Amino acid sequence: MRSGSFFLHMISLETRKLMIYRVDFWITMLVNMVAHLVVLWAIWNALFAESNQQFIGGWDLQGILAYGVMVFLTGRIVRGGDLQMIIATEIYDGSLSRFLVYPRNYVFTKYAQQLGNVAPDLVQSLLMAMVAIPALGLSTTAIISPASLAMAVPSIMVAHLLFFLMSLPPQFVAFWADNVWSLSVLLRFVSMLLGGALLPLSLFPESMQQVLSWLPFVYLYQFPTLVLLGKVGVTEWATGIGSCLLWCIVMGWLAVPFWKRGSLRYTGVGI
Amino acid sequence: MARYLKLYLQFLKFSFSRSLEYRMDFWFRIVMDCVFYAVELAFFTILYQHTDLLGGWNYDQILIFVSGYLVIDAIHMTVFSNNMWWMPIYVNKGDLDYYIVRPVSSLFFLSLRDFAANSFLNLIIAGGILTWSLMRYPGELGLDNLIWFLFLLLNGSLLHYIMQMYFQIPVFWIHTNRGLVNAFFSTTKLMERPDRIYSDWTRRFLMTIFPTLLVIALPAHVLFDGPDPLVISLILGVTAVAFLGMRSFWNLALRHYSSASS
Image (cartoon, rainbow over all chains, first blue to last red; front, side):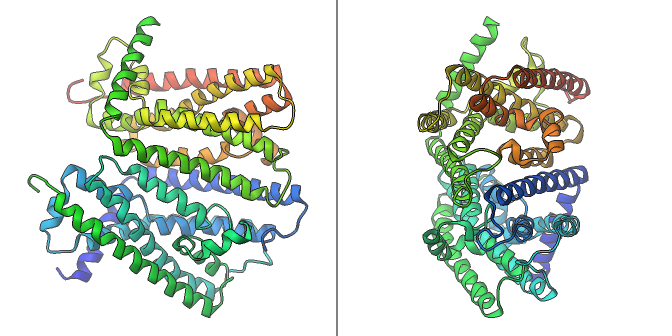
């Protein structure tokens, strides 16, 4: 099987696996969406009402609600399902052995699986957007257009790749440590706060915003969301995509020594 | 009762000795929880850069509210979390048999067997944050209020566990509860925010049918506004009803359970 068709086969396999549990799929979607929208709506309405301000961090109420919904939906796609523990589990239970004898690169195979995990999240995000966007109303600070939508697709794709590559080193620590679940969760907490998934970064103090703009987290959540909401010009967008790809190279490069040293320590029986 | 206490002491002994075997994980988990605490505190600190009040509470009050939630989360991570993780695995693999045949309550055994000793250190840290936020509070907090608050905090931990169990138990029928558990964790956001930001109808719903606001938001009101008998009765009453309902749900699930050896 050629690399391309193998890649697509892995994606389809992973997607079908996830779609077996349909009740699970719909319940997760519904509860997630309702809980998120209720909290989002309540907290920003209360903040705008109690602060007596029309704009906070450059956003009006409708704009910040749009940001909250979109960062939630794009974030689901960027994180692409729950693959974080799969690599560590394969290292622990020895199922990594069969991948090592396959004539395919291990990380390449895992990325195909990760993409397969995205498909249900993508469907859920689109369905949620269809419900949430009409409920938001119009905003003067966030306008979704066909152009912004077209620019957002590659932004989300590179963000997804960056998240996958960032997740690799904590997973490869499993070659040394007995449990790395905490490291994956840690990465998620940090990236969500510093990447603008919890709050737009324009609400952070000025000095912190400067520092955060130099870190990779901003490309995971805030950048694709701002692109989607039409707040990023074409030049800025191209620079952002380039920076994100640069961070992908850095993160991939950081993962290499973990894999090389770790795989030398690895022992497994049978396949 | 004495038998159950003795058994729980054995669980503690076993859990501490086991967690010290995995030293790296021990520290990873402590760091993870500390980062979680930092993220929660940073979230509200940033919001209060733009307002003086949120849900009627000022920054000093919100710090106590968040710290209280951190203590509840730490109790959950220490006492219940590992057990909640294993429960669906036992059900699906048929390992539940070993627990059903023991001469103690299977619910007790499966909910409390694994005590996360590493998270216990985080419980101390979360307790420290709560103490700090109470000490720096500029207003007067009566002793009565404080005692009620701490008692209702423990009740909140129990209620948090009960609510998660409602999302765990369906595993007996649907075989994977990954989505349900994820759904539960997404609803915990509702309890991490002040109750007065919600509309009246949402508050009513979240105080009775899905009582997330009784976990920490209402106990915080008892601390700031004094022990209102009506509020306290509501919190304890709903917890009792939720617990009895959960126990019946558990017994119903056990009747539906089958494995190769049972």
